[in-house]
Every structure is written in structure tokens, then in C-alpha cells.
Image (cartoon, rainbow, N blue to C red; front, side, top):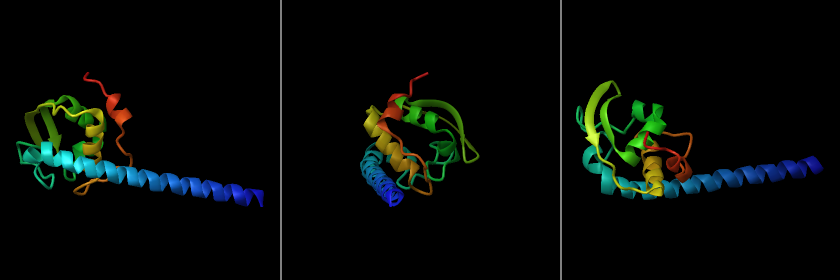
Length: 134
């Protein structure tokens, strides 16, 4: 009986964690969508498809999914130089957007979970704060 109670408590705690995180991710993505519309849509387009040879796509982006820290750093500090995204080379400059760490986490959660992208791990404020300029 005792192991049944302990098992039940673990199940409830695990379920609560999953449900809370899902709601947290959805809220972050909703805020991120607004930020994307305000700051990113001009270059990366409404559906994240970018502009070929000028602004890289965020939709189904192999670079984005394989280079998490560099992607977050690019939003936080700006980005310059060559990068290959989905087999196409881009060489442009993205200026820093002036977003705080929470805003960066929100927009990254939106991008990482939109247009065919699916991230297993939520971007947190702490993760963004830990990324330095290099």
C-alpha cells in the first residue's frame, strides 16, 4: 500500500511538472510571437522563410537547431559573417535588437517551436544570461 501511495504521488508530481512547463512554454511563445512580429518579421518574414541569399530562414532551419548557443548569442549580441543554413550560404549583418534576456528567451522559444521546428528544451532566462559575447 505504501509503495502505491508513493507511486501515485510521483505520478501526480510528474504530471504537474509537465503541465506547468507546457503552460510556461505556451506563455513564453505567445510573448515571443509578439516580439517576433515587432523585431524579426521584416527580415525573416511572417512564416520564418527569410529571404534567400540575404536573410536566412528560421523555418525548418538546420543551423538554428544544431547551433543553439550561437543562435541565442546572435539575437543577444547581433551576428556578422558567413553562415550556412539549409545548404545556402548567407553573409550579412544582424544588429543587436536591444532585447533583455527574458525577451530573448521568449522569441527563441517561439522560433524554436514554429514553422516545422520543435525544440526538446525550453530556452530559459538563465540560459540566455549565461551566454557571453565571446
